[in-house]
Amino acid sequence: DADVTQTPRNRITKTGKRIMLECSQTKGHDRMYWYRQDPGLGLRLIYYSFDVKDINKGEISDGYSVSRQAQAKFSLSLESAIPNQTALYFCATSDLPRFTGELFFGEGSRLTVL
Amino acid sequence: QKEVEQDPGPLSVPEGAIVSLNCTYSNSAFQYFMWYRQYSRKGPELLMYTYSSGNKEDGRFTAQVDKSSKYISLFIRDSQPSDSATYLCAMSPQGAQKLVFGQGTRLTINP
Image 1 (cartoon, rainbow over the protein chains, first blue to last red):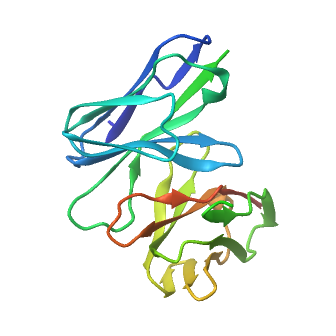
Image 2 (cartoon, each protein chain N blue to C red):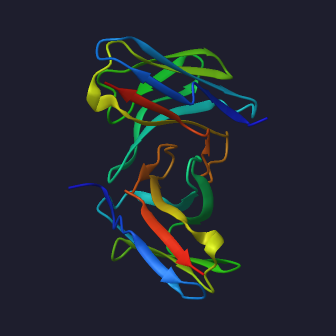
């Protein structure tokens, strides 16, 4: 089983619908992240959480919200999806206390908003 | 202007060639420099990590950081078809576990 699991892997939805992407990890890491990937734009940080009680906005948080339900679970929600939120979404984790630049990514959730 | 700029390619080279991938950046606070490799339909995986300036070698891969020029490079020697992937540079300031990624370069190694 993967260390960082994202569900669903693929989702097609309509404008205005509420969508939740879920992430769970078995690595025991405290820090979790949500990124989106778009062609030509690379990976951009949406939200990150350094522990269960700590939630921080990234560079593109507008239109998104998150919930850290437990150390191992971090969910991303789109309250009212719009077409420009069509993208590949990645959850990632990192370890404490030493930072070596390594994020551990899930396999991605491809979201299409029609 | 983006903090990190990377030529998105695509880049196509024959097997055995030396590949050079590059990124430039504008934030002088960056201290950690990484290269990630992403295969199709997979999440990125850390390939190389360098702290501050200098070179680092790992098998066929060499990472170089030139902080005076705000320029980093990844060299792949004796490239193989299995090296075909998207390569993303990433950077982070001291003490911050937030990475800023380049746009990624799509590389194809032709047999």
